[in-house]
Image 1: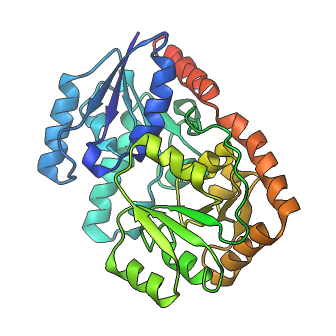
Image 2: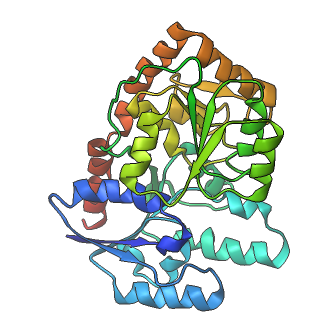
Amino acid sequence: MKINYFFRNPKVGYSIQRVFQTVNEKISENTQIEEIFLPSPKSNIVSIIRNGLYARKHQGKINHITGDAHYLTFFLSSKKTVITVHDIMYYSYLKGLKKKIWKSLYINSLKRAKKVVFISEFAKDQVLKELDLPKKSYCVIPNPVSSDFIKKDKKFNVEKPIILHIGAQSGRKNLGRSIAALENISCHLRIIGKMNNEIIRLLKKYNIEYSNASNLTNEEIVNEYVRSDIVNFPSLFEGFGMPIIEGQAVGRPVITSNISPMKFVAGDAAVLVNPTDIESIKLGYLKIINNELFRNEIIYKGFENVKQYQVDNIAKRYINLYKEMIK
C-alpha cells in the first residue's frame, strides 16, 4: 500500500503541511508514502487545471488530499481518494456567482472522494449543512500534536509575562482585540506572523511592549512556545485550533474562545473567553496572571487533555481508514 499525500503549494501557508507531516512521519515507519506539493499557489481556473493535471500524473494506490485543494477530486480516482476537510469558513463570506463556483469546487467536490475526514465536529457540521453525504463516507479524526511539543517547565513571569500570539491578522486571529485587552497589563506580546500597519498602529495606541517574527522553522516555533508564559488564541473562527494543544503539550496556560470548535479542543484545560468582548479577554489574562493555583490547575489539565491528540493515536486511525479503503 502506497499513500500519496497532496499538499497545497507552500506559498499558501505551512500550517496544514506541518500537521500532516507529523502524521506522515509516523505512518511512514511501516507504509510507503510520497509527499506531493501542487505547483501553483493560486486558485484561478488556469491554476486549478494546472494543479489538477499535476495531481493526476502523481496518483498512488491511495490519494490523500490533505488540505483545501478539494477540487483535486475532479482529477483523481474517486475510489482511491480520501480528503481531509479543515473548514469551509471562506464560503460563508461569498455571494452570487462566485459563491456558486466555490461551492462546486470546494464542497460539492467532496462527493467524489471515497472517504471524507473532518478534523472536528464543527467542520463536519459546517459541510453537512451544505451537502448530503452518506454516513459511511465520512468520519472525524482530529489533528495531532507534533511530538516536538513536549513538557518544558518554566517559572511563570508574574511581573511581565510573555504572551505568545500565533497569527498576525487583526481579523480572524483577533489580534486587534487582544491588543486592546492588554492595555495597562504589564506584559510582552510576542507576535508570530507578518504584521500590517493597522496592527502596528494599535500596538502604539495601547502602548503595548511587543516583538515580532515571521517565516519561522518548526524548531523555532516550538521554541516560541517554550519561551512564552501564556498562549493567546481567542480566534474568531477555526476548523480546529492547533495552538491550543501545542500550548497545552508544552505546559503553558492557554486562552481561547468559548465557541466551537476551540472550546471542545481545549476541553476544561484553558481559559475560555468571549472573543468579541475585549473585557472578557482582559479578565482571562488577569485570571491567569494573578491566580497561581488556577494557572497550575489548567496546565495540569492541559497535559491530560492533549493525550487524545498524540500522533500515535491519530496515525493509527488514518491507517485503519486506508486499510478499509482497499478492502
